[in-house]
Image 1 (cartoon, rainbow, N blue to C red):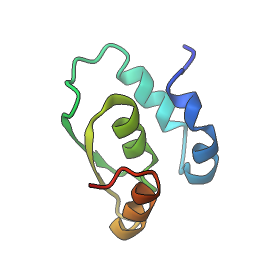
Image 2: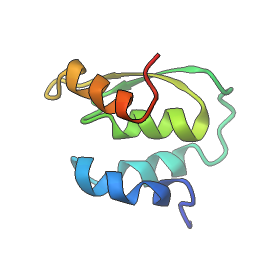
Image 3: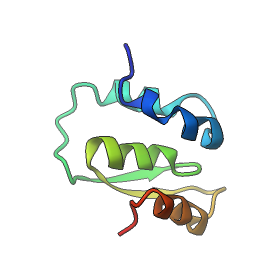
Image 4: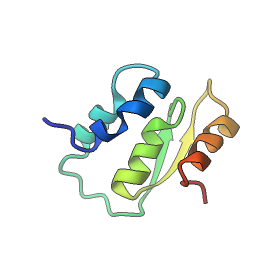
Length: 86
């Protein structure tokens, strides 16, 4: 698989990744999805919010991100910098 969506986030991935390449994993899982644009998605264990960002920007989902170790305030700041916070 070429990961045409995930590869666009390499710079962010290098800075924010907290484990295996979750963006490639998400892209594979959603390869033939039928989830409508603007669907609400809960990203549990989102880490620093990279996966939530990816889902919002690439698939048009409304994402809610929650992580035990990273504060919601920190993740909101990250989303704000990318213009994703409503």
